Length: 68
Figure 1 (cartoon, helix red, strand yellow):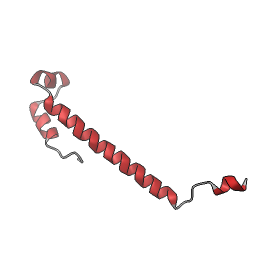
Figure 2 (cartoon, one colour):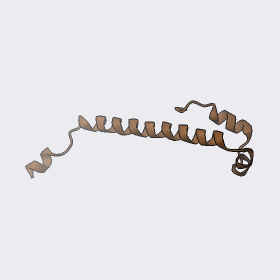
Figure 3 (cartoon, rainbow, N blue to C red):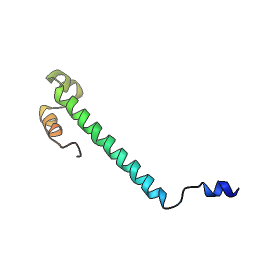
Figure 4 (cartoon, helix red, strand yellow):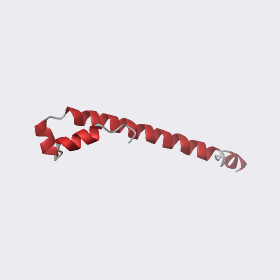
């Protein structure tokens, strides 16, 4: 039983673990933003109309930085 108690993560390590998870999630979010905005920029007029997106909306979204 003592061995099990010793293996539990300490309170000091939890915030660092959480910090890495938040950082990873943020990087994934930025990567998704970059990828989807590039895909949006490649759509032709017909595809934009099918998606219900105007040219102005595309320009607005495409001009945003990846972190926004």
